[in-house]
Length: 148
Figure 1 (tube, rainbow, N blue to C red):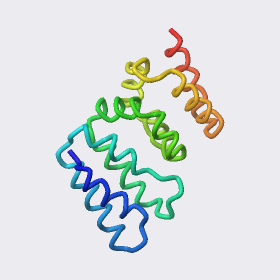
Figure 2: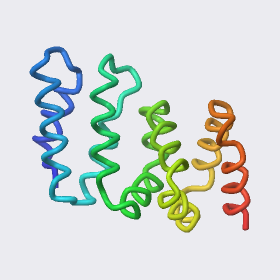
Figure 3: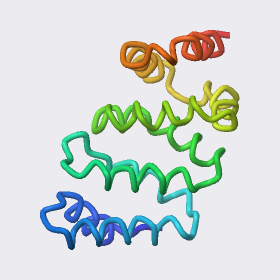
């Protein structure tokens, strides 16, 4: 698991003031993902920042999270929607659209949807419908699943 000290170093590097910070951040994220410890997922989710000027580095986080088993990844996203939405709604939208666009993760999402906070999901669904007309149909399907 990522220690508090390691997290603080990552958080400081995530300001991306120098190329060394970028390199350190990307390297460390992949190191932490290698052991596939699901306890690292919430810590990595806390690193998303909508105000970053290094969006390509944030995509490193997306791909790192997607390297976990689908069920583990989706379960952790569902568990931490509120926190991600508070800190990085743009990146949450992106993460969720990736889940919606992948048949495997979408099926897991449908199966696990009731494990998440309903109010937080509905706020996210409203945002997705507003930002992505393409996903309106699947969001309606998920709303029905949530209500059943």
